[in-house]
Length: 294
Length: 286
Image (tube, rainbow over all chains, first blue to last red; front, side, top):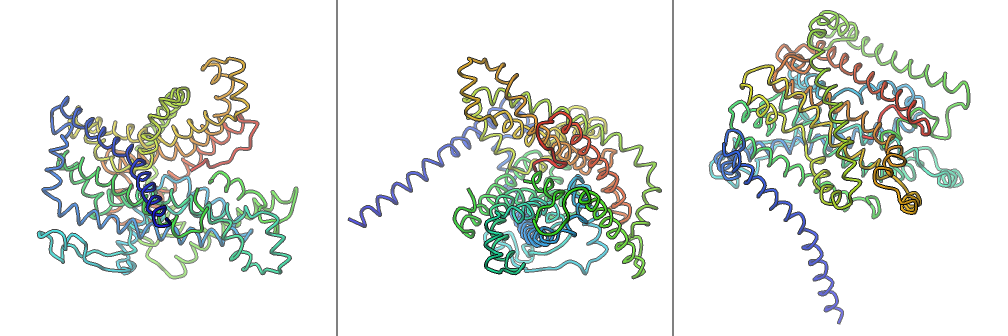
């Protein structure tokens, strides 16, 4: 009896999962059909690439694309983690120390209003003139070396590193986490303040046991914005300043007027960012206490 | 979220430190000023104290010297950037409101298109910059700089539009059930609904959207210039990389940062005039 209801529940859950994916699948099919139709109307691969042409151009260079996409998303991962860590730590300090918060305010508003791509050269140059400042956290042989015959281990040598691209990505992604940590820390309800006082909590204990947990839902929801911003930051940095990553491949495709390749690379970036975003949201759900994310 | 924080950044929040009432404001301002002075002073002291090479590690005075040196070239290219960002911003603003109204007025249309709007809003839109430049530059000739410059306008609209659209939709939708029932009882037509209720409700949201929208329009333009190299502040910044002139890069950041802070502040001033029933904040919802 018990096993039967268990199996039934699993069946219901699976059916729910499948039906909830139906709109996504339909949207994908509609997208492909529209793409094909538009291409047929224009009928010129130099103006609007056919899906089939895009596929061919990308699969011709699948090894490069594979290596570069792993490179880019390693950078994004580093940038994202850096942004979250620095954002939360600085946010806690600024939220706790009133004087510091007032002193930092004009600088925070100013740096927030800067259109951030203009800052990318500063980060890039700084690492050009300080080659020693680059910190390689972890080197690895990319998955392309294992999956594709044409890629040697040396080609696929990749790393998680703190360099110009990742620090800039972290900078761009940092603000939402930073600001929402401050908001959350200061939104602690009065009754908990009083409870802390009654229990004789020290300032550090207040932060550790009350304020931080009050801020967690704010931090979790801002992390979603940080994911997107770190992706943007890394791609912008790759555009302008390096021969690294998938961002540079788009620029290359543009310079070579290779529209099929450009379409393909863009699609891969969009899908990659979607997957990365969903992974982070899933991780947040798993790692944080229930109810942190609505 | 961000609006909230910055509103609170200005208030006495933590219920412990700080003084109340009249002296508080003065204290806040002087602390802010002190922070700025300490920051610049500390920066200058470090670069001087360690005798660092001003080309790689400029202090504030080096940045200022660099700024006065490149002031003329900045003035010649700045109008291009500001025009593209400004025009793009206004177009995106008008479009976002014009598109939001039918999406809110018709539930069916809204339900059908919202997933698309949210989907596009989550992908990194800035990544298509080379594609936009390619398409825009195509008709007029691939190396025509006038044609390429048009891409910066398109990028400004493209990057700024979706967040502003979502802000406008959220705003138009932000009416409570009681008001909604009242509208039904009165038999209000769709345009009356917007004219008398929804527009007013949406204004704070639209203003918040405008603040981020302007920064985004600047971002779109600057990245467009970075990639296409059309004369503008973005192209100027990217040319700095080859010379590894850190001071110049910071000087450019300073100019652009001051401009967008000023524009955001201007929007804030207009907002606090227009939306007099609600407290405004300097930086909108991000």
